[in-house]
Image (cartoon, rainbow, N blue to C red; front, side):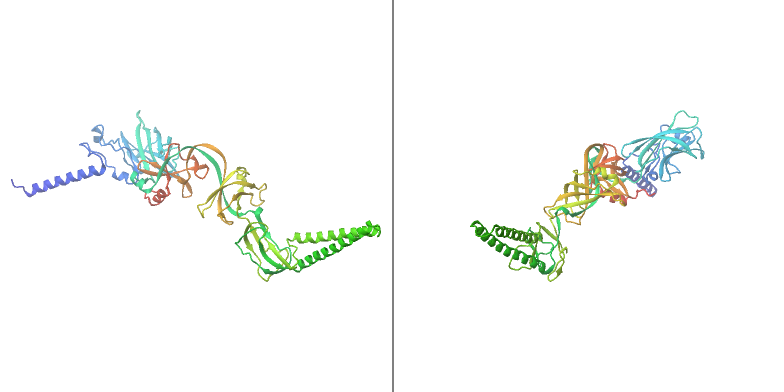
Length: 518
């Protein structure tokens, strides 16, 4: 039988409608509505807010006949609208002075109704924490007395008692403001590692900015002790030297005089010793008088004192008893160390008190830091400390060796230091470091990994796992040992959070179109 053009058009229309309906079912992942039909909420979800449960059917057919709706639709204030017996109840959020609250707008025939209306509710945060809500009349609506902390990702439900009705109207509203939507597959690809917040042992620590300095107990300012002219300087800055190694040679007339004095004293001592020996023999043989013997002995003792005095003068300036070059003064290293400063050059005339070299033993250094008055009691001599630097991955441990007993009059701070062993010379003076001083170990109810903490708009936050993604959760931190940190406010034990690579989520947050802007 031939098919007319009208019949062909009708068949094509039926096929097209069937295809669209099938596509809609596949896209929504839900069965198509039955003969009673359902209310579309596509527009209501476009802003990240869920306006109640989207039921496919009404319990009775009269609901469509009398214009009463017991499921949500979007209200004029952006919330979820519920209707019964001529009353319209909208539940949503309202913000004023930076504070968000849950608000209920009750109207009848377009006019606000507040007399005889009461409500109570419950809000469930993304972390699973529940918050009871009490409502009070505020202008033309009912408003929760409790503020809603960020992030604004929550489910809220309330029972509203309407005038003249015994059974309350149940209303609900969901919000996902600032949610980072990621599937489990996407989370795995980003490398984000999940952990669960819970109790832990944390060794309380306080961090201070500090600086590596020379160990002053092993640092010397080398001076020549004699004025003269520099003849040679075999030592150079940065050179590692041994104790007794010659640093410089100086020609000094003063040293020449002192050595000449010693040589003269030694000659006089030799003569006095010969005279004494002769007079002693003559006195013993009863040839000379005792007076001559005593005078010779006295002269010998004076000569010995003169020699000792001349030798002590040379020893005091570190000069040898050389008799070859009387004016040659060899400036030597007092201990093993590195020359960190040099202020001497060939041919230069130097004073006896000139600082010509600074020598330091860098196998031991100090990490110095400043402690404020409020933290002085937290830093004690003998406590363990960890030294780290942003300039390198190096980290070492030491103990607090000194805490100043006085506070500066202007700064009201005390100086403190940690003595570090530095065998590899890795900790160089002048390097800025972070000094973490640890006290007693304590049990804390909620703790997370330190690297999970991110800074967003100057606030410490953690990325908490919720259904279908993550939300930013502001937290207040407590004690920390550098690896684990105590959470005082913002997280409950058992909460799943992004422990590693959370910076990926922070970057995603910046790109998210759902980021909340005040």
